[in-house]
Image (cartoon, rainbow, N blue to C red):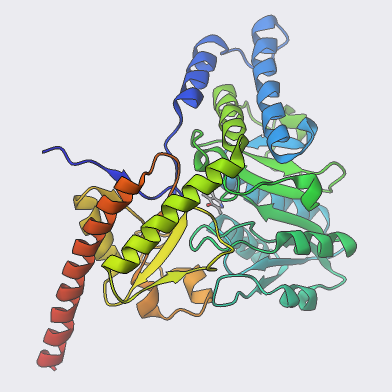
Length: 394
Ligand SMILES: *Cc1c(COP(=O)(O)O)cnc(C)c1O
């Protein structure tokens, strides 16, 4: 019998929508001209690119000239942090970020530390929310940049970026936010939030992989990232993949249209799953803030059930979920996010992230919960035997 797949890893990536695919197919086949070329084929491709730029800008309340296409969220984060830090070295070499950022932010900051920058990693509370007071304490005359994510990808906690942006702005410090998880799950308006730079990535909201954008507020002092041709206003060299950018445009327009309803539906399904799971499996707990969280995120610690084993067993049953974040899965590295929240190694090793999106029904949840119940029961009994055997061997 063919096993149905229940995909519960929308925070890792989302399936591409048919509309996005059709748009890309059209652009790939018809508009292959180089968007920098002077002749009509090139100008046509450029028009497709600019239409996509307008869609991205409209979705986040920016001006089109403030949108720069990138190869994804990772590049946008690398560029925002490196570019602002280096362009403002005359003022100072201090950067503030948090302990729970995505690796594309943390590793960029570590690299800058090797180059002589000072970085403060702001701690979080047990709910995975950054400590606002610690930011005030860390700020100094040499601080040029604060980078705090809008919402965490592992535990879903929303961060107080509105307050941080106001604080940064009042202190003459640039503020960047990694909003990769937030687009399509939260209403985002860069002008209203008063951020200087914001990263987004298409494949987290039903668009294609390998394309994203960096919003850079007009007047922001930032170095260019890629050296070469004069594309993207001479800030990001390289021939853009026009079809991917067009896909991003359609995806972000769809993701931000009728947003309230979309959020509501995803939240209802995730909460239903959470309730059913807590009825079916004992000794489990939810990670992240109980209410101030992404609508589709459900990070659960299953006491006594090693998450990697459960995830593998679930995979054989047709359920996709993630132990740790996708970026760290398989690396055997314990989650830096859960560690920053004060979880011990045992808790980290028994945590699974289920993330929801469009297309997941309550029936899917019922099926998934029953399979999770079976898988956790099995792994718990195996773990118990192993612990018993270890004791006997001693
Ligand atoms: C997925 C993700 C990224 C990386 O985006 P890519 O487009 O996959 O490079 C960055 N930050 C967060 C919070 C993410 O969830």
